[in-house]
Amino acid sequence: MKVESAYIHIPFCVRICTYCDFNKYFIQNQPVDEYLDCLIEEFKTADNRTLKTMFVGGGTPTALNESQLERLLKAINEHFTISGEYTFEANPDELTPSKIKLLKDYGVNRISMGVQTFDQDLLKVLGRTHNTADIYNAVELANQYQINSISLDLMYHLPGQTLKQFEDSLDIALSMDINHISSYGLILEPKTQFYNLYRKGKLKLPNEDVGEEMYELLLDKINQSSMHQYEISNFGQPGHESEHNKVYWMNEGYYGFGAGASGFVHGIRYSNVNPVNHYIKKIRNGERPILHQTTPTHREQMEEQMFLGLRMNQGVNKSVFNHKFNENIDQIYAEALSDLSKKGLIINENNAVKLTDRGKVIGNEVFEAFLLD
Image (cartoon, rainbow, N blue to C red):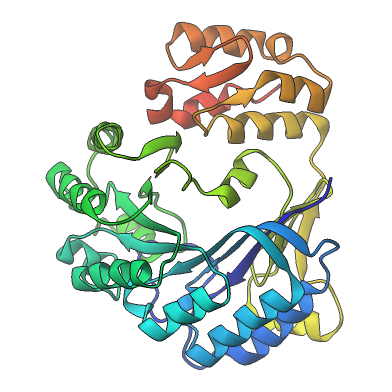
């Protein structure tokens, strides 16, 4: 199957956030230009250069200076033709007029901003470099330069966060001139500052019930807005859903370029080496920078199709599943479908399996039921 999407990883940040476990490094004294040389070299390994979606994430791509950013944008356009959605992740305080103009000039049509919260105290707890004024300014600039889609990331279940604080952030976000919100509950990941503080008893999180209340509040607020939910954590106005992320959830192929990037190409899942110097060394030696790769078994592919597809409101399409795997979804998952339907966690329709609102709240429990013994 032809791969028509790509993810590019820029592993540099101006500051390391307390909760983040992505592959990232403090940008000062990093070999950024050499990294870009190697990234551009890796682009040449793609066997298809005509793409429908491109997503540049990190780290923070906007941590690059203007000349580095332009060099990256130019190289992407030289190596790929992007017919659809072209997304850049950004920090609000790094979106200067000149950087937004560069993005616009090179065809970027979607910006995903790491806002996380509008509460100034919580921004400090998260180790963010921006303040609330930066968010307003960045959204205004993106609209001024006519970026087609503007998405904000918001987090909940943060240390010390109240339901009211999350509601206030949501209300502000929904009142802004944006088209999309991604909202995730905090997960304590190993190797993060938050995780280490939590283990030492120095970090207090709201209890799980409050986390669920925050998610239910999120669904209520979205239902009253111009946006609609299309995936467990993603909400957009019509025509502004993330087409790139849908590629992941629909279990389709994509290239992954850069240190720590993952890809899924021709049935093989792979991930690249994390350390920037290891990545550079492998490319310089004329090697693929792959750390490990696997070919999912028939059973694993079916499980992935269920886990990923159920995240979306449209659910898992039965005819697509049956055709793709030559298996009948109602037969192979008969017990799980019956059990989860009785518990009110899924809706088992003629041609799709979908999560109920309650199922979305405790999604992981539902997903586990589709692990085949």
